[in-house]
Amino acid sequence: MFCQSSDELNELVIEAKKCVKHGKVADYIPELGKANPNELSIAIYYPNGNCISAGDIERKITLQSISKVISLALVLMDRGTDYVFKHVGMEPTGDPFNSIARLEMMDVAKPLNPMINAGALSVTHMIQGEDVKERLQRLLTLIQTMTNNFEINYNENVAQSEFDTAYLNRSLAYFLKQHRIIDEDIEQLLDLYTKQCAIEMNCLDLARIGLVFAMDGIDPDNGKHILPADVARICKTFMVTCGMYNASGEFAIKIGIPAKSGVSGGIMGAVPGKFGIGIFGPSLDQKGNSIAGIKLLELLSKNYRLSMF
Ligand code: GLN
Figure (cartoon, protein in one colour):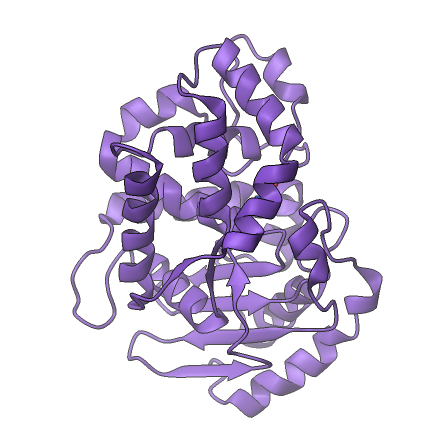
């Protein structure tokens, strides 16, 4: 039986919180550096609409890399799998999320997967629409439908702060443009990418996104497919193989569920067929994952046997 009460969840949060002191808030995006490292919150969303939560559940967080799973879902629907995987690969990498090293070592400079920054830039490039505004709106509409919250938008300060300092992402994008993986104006692409990463919501919204993935793309309220089952399956597979960047192997062994993290300290989890999880804990480990968030998932997985494996 899985955890049914917010009190049970609260106890696990208190236990997991002990490790926040071993991590550090991301500050390479200056706006993110303002987060309080001691926070930890979680929401769990069940298919019948029940939710349980612990911590400050109203707190809004930006998606950062979690957005990469949803932009991937959108381009798979826009362009089909053959086209998408001509521009981005399917293989995990042992390198950090923002590494440029592999691109130069490949025969074709195709990014290894859509969850590292190079791959995510290539995916964002494939989002269809007339201009940045329309492309962003299409992504927002998908996210609003998945959360059933039509107020969701991006945080302008966080987007601007990343846009002003995204030198490494610009380098990756220019490299990909040189090798014809990307053929749009790089400032325009960075404008869209940084707004995508700055889309913000609370843990409950994040948990509902996890639930839609967990239910093979189905909206829990009306039973309709928001995503085709095949798209949800591909996204979940990437969450298992690459969702925690170069910590995905250890995460699969210790926790064993599809999940995606972001440098804001968010983690979105999808327990197949069962529920969605949204976590916020901005103190990060060395690989850029929420340190207390991972501890919390480890406790949940152990206590309630969540591993798929
Ligand atoms: N916006 C961030 C970046 O591109 C996302 C990275 C992350 O969350 N790991 O650097």
